[in-house]
Length: 297
Image (tube, rainbow, N blue to C red; front, top):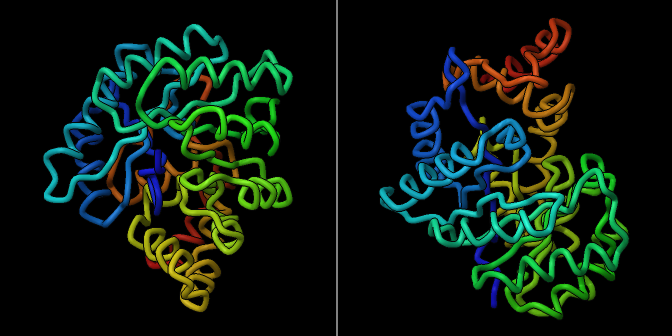
């Protein structure tokens, strides 16, 4: 099975209304704008979507809205829906529900808090992949999970399950990423999970990006990824350095705080969060505003 999630996908925010409910209108407009701006695929209910703060009903409503937007648009884009949990049985249940909802793939994060061994990770992801027929993308983000999917484990999973088609790599470990790319079977790809490392990962042979920055600058991130994938290193490098301050500043506090502040500044959502997420602090706001001004945003 080949990976349908190449290019630039957006790790979507989840807008909330003043009463903390889902702001479905703002989300729908955001989804449509993303597609109009050329994004290659949509990623609802990941880290940037504040998924731990969503009820299961809200989780699947967000996915439903993403699927509706993707289907209604003149250009159909695939939807890679979040389906991770630190309990294997729950992750299997979520993946099955994502498949039943009509998503094009399931993004499955490494189990968090319980810190499984590499064999535990292999068995966890094997159980999820065996339970569904849709493509599965592993999500490796040790800074949030305290659990690193090592290169040998990612490659073993890709060999064992044809529907494990990619890993979203947010470990920041370029040596590990290089080993995955070098050893991968045909159809298994590395997607950058870190905006600022995208140029480097694609130069090594990665095939895409799941981007936080593209919530606000989708066209630019699509262009950066496309240039890097087609070998136009000069254009990709120029875009990388132009947007590098932005890629960095949107992580000056815990994401998605800064990117939601940016989108509020742009009039695309309200700056509403659910605890324990809170609005960015004054010093961070000043820092972000300086970068936005420099970019003309």
